[in-house]
Image (tube, rainbow, N blue to C red; front, top):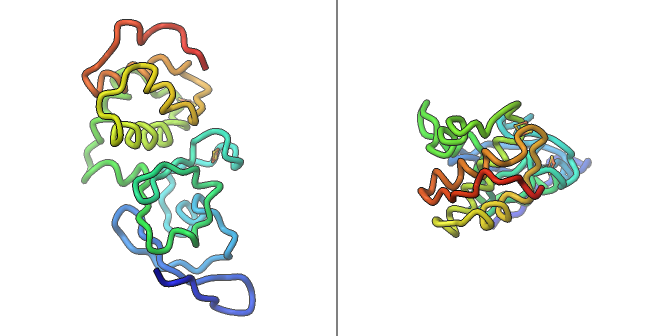
Length: 174
Ligand code: FES
Ligand code: FES
């Protein structure tokens, strides 16, 4: 992997960032977060800034297929890696099946947490395509939602996998 190269006497770096299969030339301060570069340099605003402190999961993206809080991950560290944002989940102008089922199940209210929820769900289903309710709640435990109470989100994930459990509508723990 090539290291990011200094572009002047400041701490600005020039490097390439691959996001959703497209390579973007980036020139940015070495300390810029992946979240900041995705939103402000790449121009993809689906990834949200909530706490900016690794607490809420609104900024979740995949780096080489693994979920990370992009607010607390340096963009320069992603050179040579593959970044996937919520925009990369769907193809063409169609919703990803997870997006559709989340909408249909009433798992979206203000929608601020939704991109992070989708990324975490995608990561969960990649390693566990047949999760039970507890698996889903643990898989989404890093994603805060202030609106839904989580019930419909969990139900939607179970519905998407065809493993809806009868108690998915029980009171949430978080
Ligand atoms: S904005 Fe990154 S975890 Fe909250
Ligand atoms: S739908 Fe509003 S924060 Fe989750």
